[in-house]
Amino acid sequence: MIPFVRQFDFAYGRPDRVSPRIQRVIADNPGPFTFTGTGTYIVGRDGPTASVAVIDPGPPDDAHLQSILRALEGRTVSHILVTHTHRDHAPLSRPLSEATGAPVLAAEPPARQTHPSGGLDEEEDVDFRPDRVLADGERIIGDGWTLRALATPGHASNHLAFVLEEERALFSGDHVMGWSTTVVAPPDGDMTDYFASLDRVIAEDFETIWPTHGPPVTKVAPFLAAYRVHRLEREAQILGRLAAGDETIGQMVPILYAAVDSRLWPAASLSVQAHLIKLVREGRVIADPAPTLRARYALIDQALG
Image 1 (cartoon, rainbow, N blue to C red):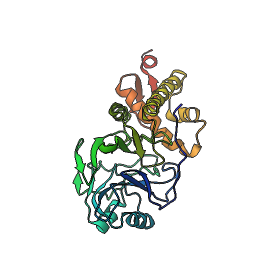
Image 2: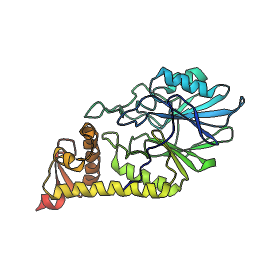
Image 3: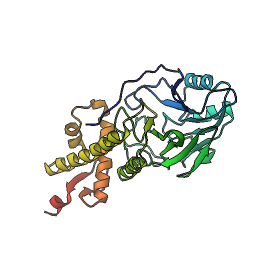
Image 4: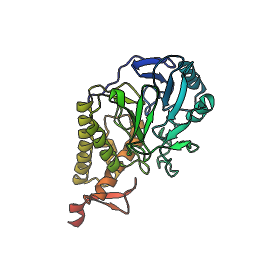
């Protein structure tokens, strides 16, 4: 079982200092994919001459913009960083840039794609363009803080996490969340990439993970180990459903996600598809005609038998 962390003290719009170098302001956009809302992080110290960075400004919400600006009052913003270009993370970056004069930094936006189910909060901010594209491993150095870009594709092809080196902490965006597993939704989400990125984060041995949604993860090693095991167990369950005779994602999801609100089944279907795409690549499963949401699937041994 994943030791989820779901309880924490917050109020919408209130700037909370959560570590010596980190403040958090939460947007009032709760939902099934955002939990209590988007957490915008301000990295840097207090004081009228301090220079800070802002991570994930959030959705296009003027009230949240005003809350961020109040929290920043008297300080200079040197950089605005975006973990990925989904609508609950990126849109407010441009208004915040216009208000502060700070450049927006992120990975290259992906090719414009929409999820076949439609309506997921994870759809792209199609208007987003960074002022500067960040490369994996690039460091942004500020006033008493150093942030290192860590490429973590999987949830999104252009997903970056940011390492706060002075605190051995990771701003994980949506790659790792304390309150839930992460949606990996094709065509932009990729389960093979997700596993590789998760292994990369595990190898860094962080002390704290700060997701964009929900509270921090402070018992990092056991949490990430359980997170990974859960993905492997889901993969095994999918193989088990194929062995039992299921051929379609529509047959699998009501069984695999029987304990999950059916309103989330469209997202679950995409996650199952992501696993199946990985299994097809690995030569363990065959898809007819291709690994889409509506394809028919079979184990290779069954298909050959």
